[in-house]
Amino acid sequence: MRKPEASGKNNVNNINKFRKGLWSPEEDDKLMNYMLNNGQGCWSDVARNAGLQRCGKSCRLRWINYLRPDLKRGAFSPQEEEMIIHLHSLLGNRWSQIAARLPGRTDNEIKNFWNSTIKKRLKNLQSSNASPNTSDSSSEPSKDVMGGLISTMQEQGIFSMNMDPSLSSSSSLATSMKAMILNTMMDPLLPMLDYDHGLNMYGGAGGYESITAPPCMAQVGVLNSGTDHGFYGEGIFEGINVEIPPLESVSCMEENAKTQNIQDNNTDKYSYSSPVNSLYHRNCNITSNNKTDNIAADQMGNLWHGSEELKVGEWDLEELMKDVSAFPFLDFQ
DNA sequence: AACCTATGCAACCGCAGCGAA
DNA sequence: TTTCGCTGCGGTTGCATAGGT
Image (cartoon, rainbow, N blue to C red; front, top):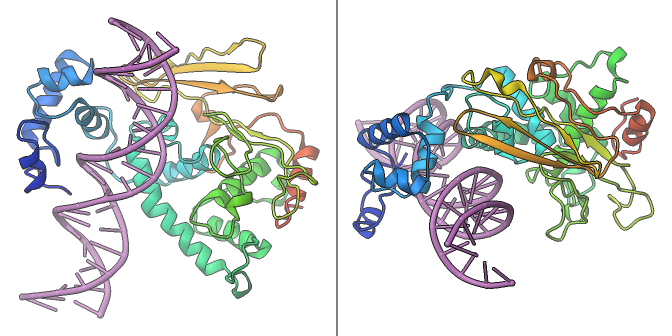
């Protein structure tokens, strides 16, 4: 941790500017008192009016990540871990979106948790499951590796999902599994993926073959055989749309936050907003290019209960299994 | 006890989006 | 239309601490 009186450079260089480094208890008090008395306004005004020699950005960060009264401190519960993993499989590194669905947790906290704990675990799993044959220069993913990864993740509780054979054809199971696997493949820590021919959840930029997905929605688009978007030379997915849990009120302060406004302007563009709490109201626009998309307005509790299934869009099972079976190194059947 | 290394996490940085002027 | 300031986000850094040797 940085010391409140960060030595040397910062303080010297910022005598007439803004303070940097760790926050002192006095600064915390000032900010806390100001926020409680005045609420959030322009952050640069907050910094000034609270008598802090900090930039507004720093004040905002401190409040959001540390001082906010509704923050939940302490270790992540297993349920939260599962939630994070699952949401990450759907949302990727959109930490703020993930945090919006975890009451009392901050994006920074989740990001740190992911980058340290979970990535480490996955890395261990990868190394422990990778067969010698797949550790060579070939970037082709191995069925064994992926299968092992999944099973080991289950064994170790990283990815818990009911694998009862009777549920193996469940669309939600396969959907969640597919989303997880897709995202797992996109994870930079897994070098098995040839990123030059990989998937781009965010659409557009970079040298990726672009398979676009709108913000707030995990959508893995079309990869057809015989197109330039081949994945290791093989077509894989017809469009995959995975719904994510809608933003819910994550604060006890606003019970009425359950109301969600879902607007359909008939151009396949949806937008919804959900109060997160009185100070942090996040908006999220969802753009869909699939007519079957819809926004689940279910309660969070219906969406996630430990290992229960994530609510997903209406998928045709056959189509789904076709998608999955087309996957060159997965066999769910 | 001293040193080294790994880990966790608070905070910073740069960028993009947005609205107002 | 452009510029500017503010906000929010994701990536990264750097320090304190725990654990190992």
